[in-house]
Image (cartoon, rainbow, N blue to C red; front, side):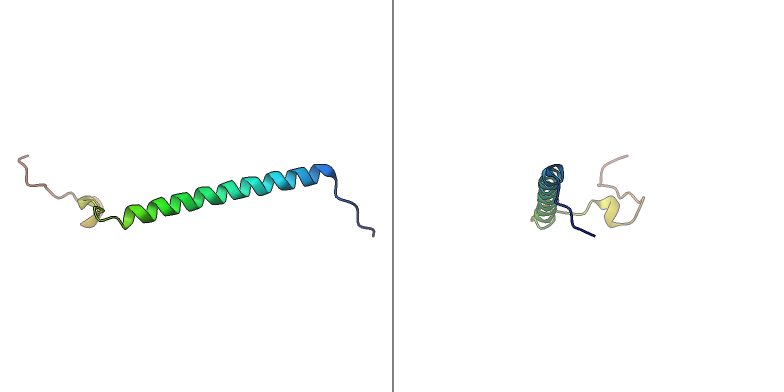
Length: 64
């Protein structure tokens, strides 16, 4: 079984796929960096509705 030479179309697709993969990887890294910086910021607090449990709402001290 002889090895065939790669067609020119395959080499073009390969470079396109590498470019798409790099862009996808860069997007994932940007999202991870933004998430990390948001969570580690000083002003970050978990909302009261999530801190006390699912579905529970705590009052803010106002009149209802």
